[in-house]
Length: 545
Picture (cartoon, rainbow, N blue to C red):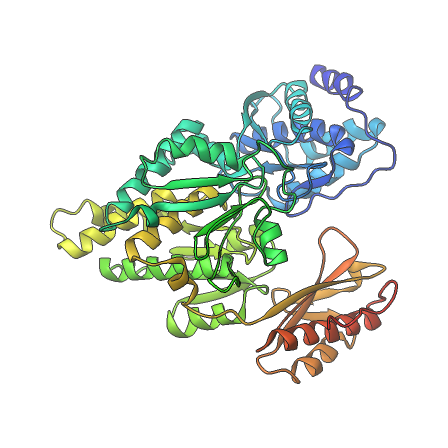
Protein backbone atom coordinates (compact mmCIF):
# COMPACT_ATOMS: atom_id res chain seq x y z
CA UNK A 1 0.00 0.00 0.00
CA UNK A 2 1.53 3.29 -1.15
CA UNK A 3 0.33 5.31 1.83
CA UNK A 4 2.17 2.96 4.20
CA UNK A 5 5.45 3.46 2.31
CA UNK A 6 5.20 7.21 2.93
CA UNK A 7 4.38 6.56 6.60
CA UNK A 8 7.52 4.42 7.01
CA UNK A 9 9.79 6.81 5.10
CA UNK A 10 8.65 9.79 7.16
CA UNK A 11 8.74 7.89 10.46
CA UNK A 12 12.50 7.39 10.11
CA UNK A 13 12.77 11.21 10.27
CA UNK A 14 10.85 11.13 13.58
CA UNK A 15 12.55 8.23 15.40
CA UNK A 16 11.31 6.95 18.76
CA UNK A 17 13.85 6.87 21.63
CA UNK A 18 14.23 3.15 22.46
CA UNK A 19 12.38 1.99 25.57
CA UNK A 20 10.49 5.26 26.13
CA UNK A 21 6.97 4.57 27.44
CA UNK A 22 4.29 7.29 27.64
CA UNK A 23 0.62 7.27 28.63
CA UNK A 24 -2.21 9.28 27.02
CA UNK A 25 -3.90 10.79 30.08
CA UNK A 26 -6.80 13.20 30.65
CA UNK A 27 -4.67 15.96 29.12
CA UNK A 28 -3.13 13.87 26.34
CA UNK A 29 0.64 13.28 26.35
CA UNK A 30 2.86 15.57 28.39
CA UNK A 31 6.57 15.31 29.10
CA UNK A 32 9.88 17.01 28.36
CA UNK A 33 9.68 18.45 24.83
CA UNK A 34 12.87 16.66 23.67
CA UNK A 35 11.08 13.29 23.95
CA UNK A 36 8.02 14.14 21.89
CA UNK A 37 8.96 14.41 18.21
CA UNK A 38 7.97 10.80 17.34
CA UNK A 39 4.76 11.11 19.40
CA UNK A 40 3.69 14.21 17.45
CA UNK A 41 4.31 12.51 14.10
CA UNK A 42 2.29 9.49 15.20
CA UNK A 43 -0.55 11.65 16.55
CA UNK A 44 -0.73 13.19 13.07
CA UNK A 45 -1.18 9.65 11.70
CA UNK A 46 -3.81 8.84 14.35
CA UNK A 47 -5.72 12.09 13.78
CA UNK A 48 -5.96 11.24 10.06
CA UNK A 49 -7.36 7.81 10.98
CA UNK A 50 -9.82 9.29 13.48
CA UNK A 51 -10.97 11.78 10.83
CA UNK A 52 -11.66 8.97 8.34
CA UNK A 53 -13.37 6.98 11.10
CA UNK A 54 -15.75 9.84 12.05
CA UNK A 55 -15.98 11.41 8.54
CA UNK A 56 -15.28 14.71 10.32
CA UNK A 57 -12.49 17.19 11.05
CA UNK A 58 -10.27 16.25 14.03
CA UNK A 59 -8.10 18.74 15.96
CA UNK A 60 -4.55 18.32 17.26
CA UNK A 61 -3.33 20.87 19.83
CA UNK A 62 0.36 21.11 20.71
CA UNK A 63 0.57 22.39 24.30
CA UNK A 64 1.49 21.39 27.84
CA UNK A 65 -0.97 23.84 29.42
CA UNK A 66 0.24 24.85 32.92
CA UNK A 67 3.43 22.71 32.83
CA UNK A 68 6.88 24.38 32.83
CA UNK A 69 8.17 25.85 29.56
CA UNK A 70 10.63 23.00 28.87
CA UNK A 71 7.74 20.53 28.67
CA UNK A 72 5.31 20.11 25.82
CA UNK A 73 2.38 17.89 24.99
CA UNK A 74 -0.38 17.03 22.56
CA UNK A 75 -4.10 16.34 22.73
CA UNK A 76 -6.56 15.27 20.07
CA UNK A 77 -9.96 16.94 19.71
CA UNK A 78 -13.04 14.97 18.64
CA UNK A 79 -15.68 16.24 16.14
CA UNK A 80 -17.87 18.32 18.48
CA UNK A 81 -14.84 19.96 20.07
CA UNK A 82 -14.84 17.47 22.95
CA UNK A 83 -12.01 15.31 24.34
CA UNK A 84 -10.89 12.19 22.45
CA UNK A 85 -13.03 9.06 22.96
CA UNK A 86 -11.51 6.68 25.61
CA UNK A 87 -10.99 3.77 23.16
CA UNK A 88 -8.92 6.09 20.99
CA UNK A 89 -6.86 7.23 23.99
CA UNK A 90 -5.76 3.58 24.20
CA UNK A 91 -4.85 3.60 20.48
CA UNK A 92 -2.85 6.80 21.04
CA UNK A 93 -0.86 5.12 23.83
CA UNK A 94 -0.23 1.98 21.73
CA UNK A 95 0.89 4.03 18.74
CA UNK A 96 3.18 6.32 20.78
CA UNK A 97 4.89 3.35 22.45
CA UNK A 98 5.28 1.07 19.40
CA UNK A 99 8.94 0.56 18.55
CA UNK A 100 9.92 1.77 15.07
CA UNK A 101 9.68 -1.68 13.46
CA UNK A 102 6.19 -2.28 14.97
CA UNK A 103 4.63 1.02 13.90
CA UNK A 104 2.89 -0.29 10.76
CA UNK A 105 1.45 -3.28 12.63
CA UNK A 106 0.07 -0.92 15.33
CA UNK A 107 -1.50 1.32 12.66
CA UNK A 108 -3.03 -1.59 10.76
CA UNK A 109 -4.49 -2.97 14.02
CA UNK A 110 -6.44 0.28 14.53
CA UNK A 111 -7.61 0.33 10.88
CA UNK A 112 -8.81 -3.25 11.18
CA UNK A 113 -10.46 -2.93 14.59
CA UNK A 114 -12.37 0.22 13.61
CA UNK A 115 -13.02 -0.99 10.01
CA UNK A 116 -11.69 2.32 8.64
CA UNK A 117 -12.25 3.08 4.95
CA UNK A 118 -8.82 4.34 3.84
CA UNK A 119 -10.25 6.00 0.73
CA UNK A 120 -12.32 8.35 2.96
CA UNK A 121 -10.83 11.86 3.02
CA UNK A 122 -9.02 12.91 6.24
CA UNK A 123 -9.05 16.51 7.53
CA UNK A 124 -7.09 17.71 10.56
CA UNK A 125 -6.86 21.16 12.21
CA UNK A 126 -3.58 21.85 14.04
CA UNK A 127 -2.78 24.54 16.62
CA UNK A 128 0.11 25.30 18.98
CA UNK A 129 0.99 27.37 22.05
CA UNK A 130 3.91 29.78 22.51
CA UNK A 131 6.59 27.32 23.74
CA UNK A 132 9.86 27.43 21.81
CA UNK A 133 9.47 23.71 21.03
CA UNK A 134 5.92 24.06 19.64
CA UNK A 135 6.87 25.05 16.06
CA UNK A 136 8.96 21.95 15.29
CA UNK A 137 6.55 19.67 17.17
CA UNK A 138 3.48 20.96 15.33
CA UNK A 139 5.41 20.45 12.07
CA UNK A 140 5.87 16.80 13.09
CA UNK A 141 2.06 16.53 13.47
CA UNK A 142 1.57 18.04 9.99
CA UNK A 143 4.15 15.55 8.62
CA UNK A 144 2.14 12.67 10.11
CA UNK A 145 -1.14 13.87 8.60
CA UNK A 146 0.49 14.33 5.18
CA UNK A 147 2.28 10.95 5.30
CA UNK A 148 -1.12 9.31 5.72
CA UNK A 149 -2.60 11.21 2.78
CA UNK A 150 -4.63 13.58 4.96
CA UNK A 151 -5.32 17.30 4.52
CA UNK A 152 -4.41 19.69 7.32
CA UNK A 153 -5.10 23.29 8.21
CA UNK A 154 -2.45 24.89 10.39
CA UNK A 155 -3.97 27.57 12.65
CA UNK A 156 -0.55 28.42 14.13
CA UNK A 157 -0.66 30.15 17.51
CA UNK A 158 -4.08 29.68 19.14
CA UNK A 159 -5.39 28.97 22.62
CA UNK A 160 -6.49 25.38 23.20
CA UNK A 161 -10.18 26.42 23.47
CA UNK A 162 -9.93 28.32 20.17
CA UNK A 163 -8.88 25.14 18.37
CA UNK A 164 -11.73 23.17 20.05
CA UNK A 165 -14.07 25.94 18.83
CA UNK A 166 -12.76 25.75 15.23
CA UNK A 167 -13.30 21.97 15.10
CA UNK A 168 -16.85 22.32 16.43
CA UNK A 169 -17.68 25.14 13.95
CA UNK A 170 -16.36 23.18 10.99
CA UNK A 171 -18.22 19.99 11.88
CA UNK A 172 -21.53 21.79 12.48
CA UNK A 173 -21.26 23.45 9.03
CA UNK A 174 -21.01 26.87 10.66
CA UNK A 175 -24.10 26.43 12.88
CA UNK A 176 -21.92 26.91 15.97
CA UNK A 177 -19.96 29.78 14.41
CA UNK A 178 -17.33 30.61 11.81
CA UNK A 179 -14.18 28.43 11.94
CA UNK A 180 -11.73 31.36 12.04
CA UNK A 181 -10.04 33.21 14.89
CA UNK A 182 -11.80 36.37 13.72
CA UNK A 183 -15.13 34.49 13.77
CA UNK A 184 -14.43 33.46 17.37
CA UNK A 185 -13.70 37.06 18.41
CA UNK A 186 -16.80 38.39 16.64
CA UNK A 187 -19.18 35.86 18.19
CA UNK A 188 -17.93 36.30 21.77
CA UNK A 189 -17.49 40.08 21.67
CA UNK A 190 -20.91 40.77 20.13
CA UNK A 191 -22.63 38.65 22.77
CA UNK A 192 -20.62 40.36 25.54
CA UNK A 193 -21.52 43.86 24.27
CA UNK A 194 -25.21 42.88 24.07
CA UNK A 195 -25.10 41.54 27.63
CA UNK A 196 -23.40 44.61 29.12
CA UNK A 197 -26.09 46.86 27.60
CA UNK A 198 -28.24 45.45 30.41
CA UNK A 199 -25.85 46.82 33.04
CA UNK A 200 -27.03 50.30 33.95
CA UNK A 201 -24.55 52.99 34.98
CA UNK A 202 -21.34 50.95 34.73
CA UNK A 203 -18.40 53.12 35.76
CA UNK A 204 -14.91 52.92 34.23
CA UNK A 205 -13.78 51.30 37.49
CA UNK A 206 -16.30 48.49 37.01
CA UNK A 207 -15.14 48.02 33.41
CA UNK A 208 -11.51 47.62 34.49
CA UNK A 209 -9.91 44.21 35.04
CA UNK A 210 -6.32 43.11 35.75
CA UNK A 211 -5.36 39.93 33.88
CA UNK A 212 -2.32 37.69 34.36
CA UNK A 213 -1.68 36.01 30.98
CA UNK A 214 0.76 33.44 32.46
CA UNK A 215 3.24 34.50 29.72
CA UNK A 216 1.23 32.14 27.51
CA UNK A 217 -0.77 32.21 24.29
CA UNK A 218 -3.82 33.66 26.07
CA UNK A 219 -2.05 37.02 26.45
CA UNK A 220 -1.68 37.96 22.74
CA UNK A 221 -5.14 36.49 22.02
CA UNK A 222 -6.70 38.64 24.75
CA UNK A 223 -5.06 41.70 23.15
CA UNK A 224 -6.66 40.70 19.82
CA UNK A 225 -10.21 40.30 21.20
CA UNK A 226 -9.87 43.49 23.26
CA UNK A 227 -10.05 45.51 20.03
CA UNK A 228 -13.52 44.03 19.40
CA UNK A 229 -14.88 44.87 22.86
CA UNK A 230 -15.30 48.63 22.19
CA UNK A 231 -13.99 49.67 25.63
CA UNK A 232 -16.77 47.71 27.37
CA UNK A 233 -13.89 45.92 29.09
CA UNK A 234 -10.61 47.67 29.86
CA UNK A 235 -7.81 45.23 30.57
CA UNK A 236 -4.49 45.78 32.33
CA UNK A 237 -2.49 42.81 31.09
CA UNK A 238 0.44 41.42 33.09
CA UNK A 239 2.78 38.52 32.23
CA UNK A 240 1.97 39.17 28.58
CA UNK A 241 4.77 37.13 26.89
CA UNK A 242 7.07 40.12 26.40
CA UNK A 243 9.39 39.04 29.23
CA UNK A 244 9.25 36.36 31.91
CA UNK A 245 8.87 32.60 31.54
CA UNK A 246 5.68 30.73 30.67
CA UNK A 247 3.82 29.65 33.85
CA UNK A 248 6.80 30.61 36.02
CA UNK A 249 5.40 32.00 39.32
CA UNK A 250 2.29 33.07 37.44
CA UNK A 251 -0.84 31.65 35.88
CA UNK A 252 -4.01 30.04 37.23
CA UNK A 253 -2.32 26.89 38.56
CA UNK A 254 0.32 28.86 40.50
CA UNK A 255 -2.31 31.16 42.04
CA UNK A 256 -4.64 28.28 43.00
CA UNK A 257 -1.92 26.07 44.52
CA UNK A 258 0.18 28.79 46.19
CA UNK A 259 -2.87 30.84 47.31
CA UNK A 260 -1.13 34.10 46.46
CA UNK A 261 -1.00 36.64 43.62
CA UNK A 262 1.32 35.92 40.68
CA UNK A 263 4.71 37.56 40.37
CA UNK A 264 4.69 40.61 38.12
CA UNK A 265 1.14 41.72 38.99
CA UNK A 266 1.00 45.00 40.85
CA UNK A 267 -2.51 46.09 41.79
CA UNK A 268 -4.24 48.18 44.41
CA UNK A 269 -6.11 46.60 47.34
CA UNK A 270 -9.60 45.46 46.34
CA UNK A 271 -8.78 45.47 42.61
CA UNK A 272 -10.42 42.66 40.60
CA UNK A 273 -7.87 40.31 39.01
CA UNK A 274 -7.86 37.01 37.15
CA UNK A 275 -5.23 34.57 35.90
CA UNK A 276 -5.25 32.35 32.81
CA UNK A 277 -3.11 29.23 32.53
CA UNK A 278 -0.53 28.64 29.79
CA UNK A 279 -2.96 27.55 27.06
CA UNK A 280 -5.90 29.66 28.33
CA UNK A 281 -8.38 26.92 29.21
CA UNK A 282 -8.46 27.70 32.96
CA UNK A 283 -9.26 30.87 34.90
CA UNK A 284 -9.31 31.90 38.56
CA UNK A 285 -10.21 35.29 40.07
CA UNK A 286 -8.75 36.94 43.18
CA UNK A 287 -8.16 40.18 45.05
CA UNK A 288 -6.22 41.41 48.08
CA UNK A 289 -8.17 43.22 50.79
CA UNK A 290 -7.17 46.43 52.61
CA UNK A 291 -5.36 44.37 55.27
CA UNK A 292 -3.27 42.60 52.64
CA UNK A 293 -5.17 39.29 52.91
CA UNK A 294 -5.40 37.30 49.67
CA UNK A 295 -8.86 36.10 48.53
CA UNK A 296 -9.16 33.40 45.83
CA UNK A 297 -12.34 32.90 43.78
CA UNK A 298 -11.72 29.52 42.19
CA UNK A 299 -13.81 27.21 39.99
CA UNK A 300 -16.34 26.61 42.80
CA UNK A 301 -17.03 30.34 43.23
CA UNK A 302 -17.24 30.74 39.44
CA UNK A 303 -19.74 27.86 39.13
CA UNK A 304 -21.85 29.40 41.92
CA UNK A 305 -21.94 32.85 40.28
CA UNK A 306 -22.85 31.43 36.85
CA UNK A 307 -25.50 28.98 38.09
CA UNK A 308 -27.14 31.67 40.27
CA UNK A 309 -27.37 33.96 37.22
CA UNK A 310 -28.71 31.23 34.91
CA UNK A 311 -31.26 30.02 37.45
CA UNK A 312 -32.60 33.58 37.92
CA UNK A 313 -32.91 34.04 34.15
CA UNK A 314 -34.67 30.69 33.63
CA UNK A 315 -37.14 31.62 36.40
CA UNK A 316 -37.77 35.09 34.88
CA UNK A 317 -38.23 33.51 31.45
CA UNK A 318 -40.71 31.03 32.96
CA UNK A 319 -38.86 28.11 31.40
CA UNK A 320 -39.04 24.70 33.02
CA UNK A 321 -35.47 23.61 32.24
CA UNK A 322 -33.37 21.59 34.68
CA UNK A 323 -30.10 23.23 35.66
CA UNK A 324 -27.40 21.18 37.35
CA UNK A 325 -23.88 21.82 38.64
CA UNK A 326 -21.22 19.15 38.17
CA UNK A 327 -18.31 19.08 40.62
CA UNK A 328 -15.50 16.74 41.66
CA UNK A 329 -14.51 15.60 45.15
CA UNK A 330 -12.14 18.61 45.27
CA UNK A 331 -15.07 21.05 45.34
CA UNK A 332 -15.20 22.92 48.63
CA UNK A 333 -17.93 21.55 50.92
CA UNK A 334 -19.30 25.06 51.49
CA UNK A 335 -19.96 25.49 47.76
CA UNK A 336 -21.83 22.18 47.54
CA UNK A 337 -23.96 23.02 50.59
CA UNK A 338 -24.75 26.52 49.25
CA UNK A 339 -25.84 25.22 45.84
CA UNK A 340 -27.95 22.39 47.24
CA UNK A 341 -29.54 24.17 50.24
CA UNK A 342 -29.72 27.86 49.27
CA UNK A 343 -29.71 27.90 45.48
CA UNK A 344 -31.64 24.61 45.31
CA UNK A 345 -29.99 23.30 42.15
CA UNK A 346 -29.05 19.69 41.43
CA UNK A 347 -25.39 19.00 42.28
CA UNK A 348 -23.69 15.89 40.96
CA UNK A 349 -20.12 14.64 41.54
CA UNK A 350 -17.83 12.89 39.04
CA UNK A 351 -14.26 11.62 38.93
CA UNK A 352 -11.51 14.20 38.47
CA UNK A 353 -10.84 15.11 34.83
CA UNK A 354 -12.74 17.52 32.61
CA UNK A 355 -13.94 14.80 30.23
CA UNK A 356 -15.92 13.22 33.11
CA UNK A 357 -17.52 16.56 34.06
CA UNK A 358 -18.34 17.48 30.46
CA UNK A 359 -20.00 14.12 29.89
CA UNK A 360 -22.10 14.43 33.09
CA UNK A 361 -23.11 18.05 32.31
CA UNK A 362 -24.60 16.92 28.97
CA UNK A 363 -27.21 14.83 30.85
CA UNK A 364 -29.10 18.02 31.83
CA UNK A 365 -30.93 20.85 30.03
CA UNK A 366 -28.29 23.25 31.36
CA UNK A 367 -25.11 21.79 32.85
CA UNK A 368 -22.61 24.04 34.63
CA UNK A 369 -19.29 22.37 35.36
CA UNK A 370 -16.06 23.67 36.87
CA UNK A 371 -13.17 21.93 38.50
CA UNK A 372 -11.88 23.82 41.52
CA UNK A 373 -8.75 24.63 39.43
CA UNK A 374 -10.85 26.93 37.22
CA UNK A 375 -11.38 24.66 34.21
CA UNK A 376 -15.01 24.62 33.16
CA UNK A 377 -17.90 25.87 31.06
CA UNK A 378 -21.68 25.56 30.58
CA UNK A 379 -23.40 23.20 28.14
CA UNK A 380 -26.98 23.59 26.90
CA UNK A 381 -28.93 20.68 25.41
CA UNK A 382 -30.23 21.17 21.86
CA UNK A 383 -33.80 21.19 23.22
CA UNK A 384 -32.91 23.88 25.78
CA UNK A 385 -31.26 26.03 23.08
CA UNK A 386 -34.32 25.75 20.84
CA UNK A 387 -36.72 26.60 23.69
CA UNK A 388 -34.67 29.70 24.58
CA UNK A 389 -34.38 30.84 20.92
CA UNK A 390 -38.14 30.42 20.35
CA UNK A 391 -39.01 32.52 23.39
CA UNK A 392 -36.49 35.22 22.39
CA UNK A 393 -38.25 35.49 19.00
CA UNK A 394 -41.83 35.18 20.34
CA UNK A 395 -43.70 38.40 19.52
CA UNK A 396 -46.43 37.57 22.07
CA UNK A 397 -44.17 36.97 25.09
CA UNK A 398 -44.38 39.54 27.89
CA UNK A 399 -41.48 41.97 28.40
CA UNK A 400 -39.90 40.29 31.42
CA UNK A 401 -39.89 36.82 29.83
CA UNK A 402 -38.58 38.20 26.53
CA UNK A 403 -35.77 40.17 28.23
CA UNK A 404 -34.70 37.06 30.17
CA UNK A 405 -34.74 34.94 27.00
CA UNK A 406 -32.61 37.49 25.12
CA UNK A 407 -30.14 37.55 28.02
CA UNK A 408 -30.01 33.75 27.95
CA UNK A 409 -29.46 33.82 24.18
CA UNK A 410 -26.49 36.18 24.47
CA UNK A 411 -25.17 34.20 27.44
CA UNK A 412 -25.15 31.05 25.28
CA UNK A 413 -23.21 32.93 22.59
CA UNK A 414 -20.54 34.24 24.95
CA UNK A 415 -19.94 30.71 26.29
CA UNK A 416 -17.59 28.28 24.53
CA UNK A 417 -19.67 25.12 25.03
CA UNK A 418 -16.98 22.89 23.52
CA UNK A 419 -14.53 23.19 26.41
CA UNK A 420 -13.35 25.32 29.35
CA UNK A 421 -12.11 28.63 27.91
CA UNK A 422 -10.45 31.36 30.00
CA UNK A 423 -11.31 34.22 27.60
CA UNK A 424 -14.95 33.13 27.20
CA UNK A 425 -15.36 32.44 30.95
CA UNK A 426 -13.83 35.83 31.77
CA UNK A 427 -16.31 37.63 29.48
CA UNK A 428 -19.22 35.71 31.00
CA UNK A 429 -18.12 36.50 34.58
CA UNK A 430 -17.54 40.17 33.77
CA UNK A 431 -20.99 40.41 32.14
CA UNK A 432 -22.70 38.76 35.13
CA UNK A 433 -20.93 41.03 37.66
CA UNK A 434 -21.94 44.06 35.55
CA UNK A 435 -25.61 43.03 35.14
CA UNK A 436 -25.99 42.10 38.81
CA UNK A 437 -24.01 45.17 39.93
CA UNK A 438 -21.70 43.03 42.07
CA UNK A 439 -18.19 43.89 43.23
CA UNK A 440 -15.65 41.08 43.49
CA UNK A 441 -15.96 41.36 47.30
CA UNK A 442 -19.76 40.89 47.16
CA UNK A 443 -19.32 37.90 44.87
CA UNK A 444 -16.75 36.43 47.28
CA UNK A 445 -19.18 36.89 50.20
CA UNK A 446 -21.90 34.63 48.67
CA UNK A 447 -20.45 31.84 50.86
CA UNK A 448 -17.20 31.28 52.78
CA UNK A 449 -14.88 28.46 51.76
CA UNK A 450 -14.02 25.89 54.39
CA UNK A 451 -10.26 25.95 55.08
CA UNK A 452 -8.58 23.14 53.15
CA UNK A 453 -5.22 21.57 52.45
CA UNK A 454 -3.86 19.41 49.64
CA UNK A 455 -0.80 17.19 50.15
CA UNK A 456 0.83 14.36 48.26
CA UNK A 457 2.45 11.17 49.53
CA UNK A 458 5.10 9.29 47.53
CA UNK A 459 4.31 5.59 47.16
CA UNK A 460 6.10 2.75 45.38
CA UNK A 461 3.10 2.09 43.10
CA UNK A 462 0.07 4.41 42.85
CA UNK A 463 -2.04 1.55 41.45
CA UNK A 464 -2.42 0.06 44.95
CA UNK A 465 -5.02 2.80 45.54
CA UNK A 466 -8.40 1.94 44.08
CA UNK A 467 -11.38 4.28 44.59
CA UNK A 468 -15.16 4.37 44.18
CA UNK A 469 -18.02 6.91 44.60
CA UNK A 470 -16.43 9.48 42.21
CA UNK A 471 -13.06 9.02 43.97
CA UNK A 472 -14.49 9.99 47.36
CA UNK A 473 -13.92 6.56 48.97
CA UNK A 474 -11.04 4.07 48.87
CA UNK A 475 -11.69 0.40 48.07
CA UNK A 476 -8.10 -0.78 48.45
CA UNK A 477 -5.68 -1.15 50.18
CA UNK A 478 -7.70 -2.83 52.94
CA UNK A 479 -8.19 -0.74 56.06
CA UNK A 480 -7.30 2.64 54.56
CA UNK A 481 -10.87 3.96 54.18
CA UNK A 482 -11.70 2.83 57.74
CA UNK A 483 -8.60 4.67 58.97
CA UNK A 484 -9.64 7.86 57.08
CA UNK A 485 -13.20 7.63 58.48
CA UNK A 486 -11.84 7.32 62.01
CA UNK A 487 -9.55 10.34 61.59
CA UNK A 488 -12.24 12.54 59.96
CA UNK A 489 -14.64 11.96 62.89
CA UNK A 490 -12.29 13.89 65.21
CA UNK A 491 -12.62 17.15 63.24
CA UNK A 492 -15.53 19.61 63.11
CA UNK A 493 -16.88 19.83 59.50
CA UNK A 494 -14.07 17.42 58.58
CA UNK A 495 -13.89 15.79 55.15
CA UNK A 496 -10.99 14.02 53.48
CA UNK A 497 -10.34 11.75 50.52
CA UNK A 498 -7.31 10.32 48.73
CA UNK A 499 -6.79 9.40 45.08
CA UNK A 500 -3.85 8.22 42.97
CA UNK A 501 -2.17 10.76 40.70
CA UNK A 502 -2.80 10.22 37.00
CA UNK A 503 0.82 10.87 36.08
CA UNK A 504 3.26 9.99 38.92
CA UNK A 505 3.62 7.52 41.80
CA UNK A 506 2.06 9.76 44.41
CA UNK A 507 -1.24 9.70 46.26
CA UNK A 508 -3.06 13.04 46.48
CA UNK A 509 -4.62 13.90 49.84
CA UNK A 510 -7.41 16.47 50.22
CA UNK A 511 -8.76 17.62 53.60
CA UNK A 512 -11.07 20.36 54.83
CA UNK A 513 -12.27 21.36 58.31
CA UNK A 514 -13.67 24.35 60.23
CA UNK A 515 -10.23 26.00 60.82
CA UNK A 516 -7.02 26.03 58.77
CA UNK A 517 -5.07 24.42 61.60
CA UNK A 518 -7.62 21.57 61.77
CA UNK A 519 -7.54 21.12 57.97
CA UNK A 520 -3.73 20.96 58.09
CA UNK A 521 -3.75 18.44 60.97
CA UNK A 522 -6.41 16.32 59.26
CA UNK A 523 -4.42 16.28 55.98
CA UNK A 524 -1.27 15.27 57.89
CA UNK A 525 -2.99 12.44 59.78
CA UNK A 526 -4.49 11.07 56.57
CA UNK A 527 -1.07 11.35 54.85
CA UNK A 528 0.43 9.21 57.63
CA UNK A 529 -2.29 6.58 57.15
CA UNK A 530 -1.60 6.52 53.39
CA UNK A 531 2.16 6.22 53.97
CA UNK A 532 1.68 3.31 56.40
CA UNK A 533 -1.03 1.39 54.53
CA UNK A 534 -0.16 2.09 50.86
CA UNK A 535 3.59 1.37 50.85
CA UNK A 536 4.85 4.93 51.26
CA UNK A 537 8.36 5.74 50.02
CA UNK A 538 10.95 7.55 52.19
CA UNK A 539 10.37 9.19 55.58
CA UNK A 540 6.91 9.51 57.08
CA UNK A 541 5.17 12.84 56.30
CA UNK A 542 6.10 15.60 58.78
CA UNK A 543 3.43 17.69 60.52
CA UNK A 544 2.72 21.05 58.86
CA UNK A 545 3.03 22.99 62.13
